[in-house]
Image (tube, rainbow, N blue to C red):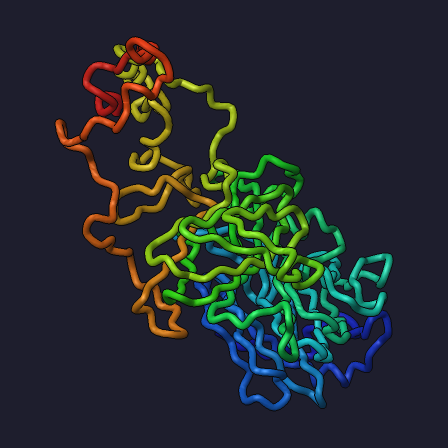
Length: 472
């Protein structure tokens, strides 16, 4: 983590409180902005001491992100956000020019306690004006951050300040309400967590508390800057501006109660699915859900602009997949106009084409799984459509995918990746050897009638001579 000295002469104009001017001398009292560019997951940030920090709480771990430190000033928690261009690594070998806060996109998570008076200084280092809307918060109208409605926009070079009381616990977001289409398409967003000030009947204590934002970008292969006018046809589906295998795993000790907070600032909904456990939705944008209103689920649909908070007991050891269940959202950049070639016979065609185009290869005649292993030429700064390797080969996923790793021997409070899970003998799917399968019990009656069981219709498919390897 780095600290940058913020000098008064870098400001192009006067600061403002809401819409009121603040004396220039007061700029010298600004909290020093803290920046972080590392795309890894930072450990939980616990405020120093207890006095002034509110009731002890389980700090949030932002997946591939971090929590913004604050300073206490006469009983007020003060934060400093700097809106600025950043470079974000989505995965090794793939980075993009984005807009973010304090060196990262999404910006740092803000954590406070219910009842805190909060003061947030916002410095605009973007090439155009901006604002910040505190999504889901109860606050004075003049602090809601909609440019032109609640306040003038913040011009480039100026620092403005927002101040309000965190009135209710929950999971919230912050993002601009000025040139919103461009600024959010460029990655300008962040998370806000308000912890309860005391025991809450609907909010359980947890051992692990994770949070991340769903975001999406349209980045032309080989380019580094998103296309901001895209409406739906995105090709980079990310969690906290990371794509698999760049997304870190969620870790839990066997028996931990785990909370996961998910916010959606993309242009479509995302059904988030976790393998191996059941969970309950324990909170929404509106606050905690009463226990009698919850039900068990394995998939939660997070719509545009929504927050969903889920909780579960990590009682099944292993490496469990966690992903968006829209299959294109677990892929890297792909062309959507490619025809389906399943069953096509390319015998005799490939070698002739390769005389004209030496790098030509056939894809899709048996499906697209070969993409997980083949190494085909790609433009610079472009991830493969399928990427990421597990202990048994290509996982054939990208984009919005990671793992939940549950271990009995994970030390309490540890966030160090334990590596891949080794299944105990006899607990893993295995190939069936010829002659080893017993006849199914009662198989002769399964077709429900007399006489021989119906036979499956014949399937006629032609396989190229020599297999797929002849096509390379």
